Image: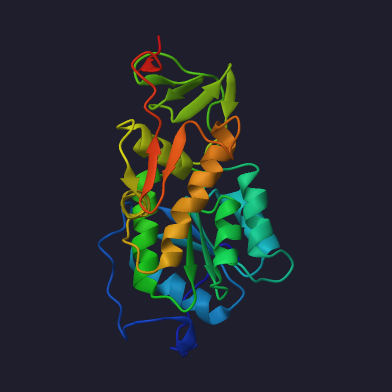
Length: 280
């Protein structure tokens, strides 16, 4: 069912799944694109019903799937701009769906899960998800996170990106890396290094001012759009830094490009004018 219709009669949802849900939710003004397409994947009808209502009222086109296999089928047919993905589902769980999507697409993914353990969050983010929201959650907070991600990545982010290396204005050399800030691509020795949109945004933030220490809280607010409310929120930053190091550093256990400043955050190595320069 590509588009789940709202029921004609009101049916109560499980109140334990949501926080702060108003009786008559108004449309959100934070949606960056009123026709962006979202794919909501959850095996609980109550969750799907409430999210469809809220997100449609916010101006989005909403597709629904109740299991992982249906989610993949809908994704290939509709190419949504963002996926809201439950973890525990029949047929294929959310982690496996994310793994398969990441093998072919950079579409933004937000996990929803009753599993709030740090290990579960890390596992989801390590697969390439852009955010992780534990249940119970506020639909308003989900709307805000969706709007933030779409504002950052824009429409059509799930489409295949061009593979050929770029040159010219906006191309920087960071050590042996060639970073094209216009196409948001990174190459080493002519070989493309595949980064998600969020990973590239983290790279840009850290290398905007080489040598400056960027606190983890600032990274979270700049890239994900919300301040840390608990220690687990900052783990999002740590996981993404680890992912970025794994792709860029010759030896991720002894990083040279992205340095840890204990108790504060991260800093890019000050490579000097010769190493960080416009590539022509």
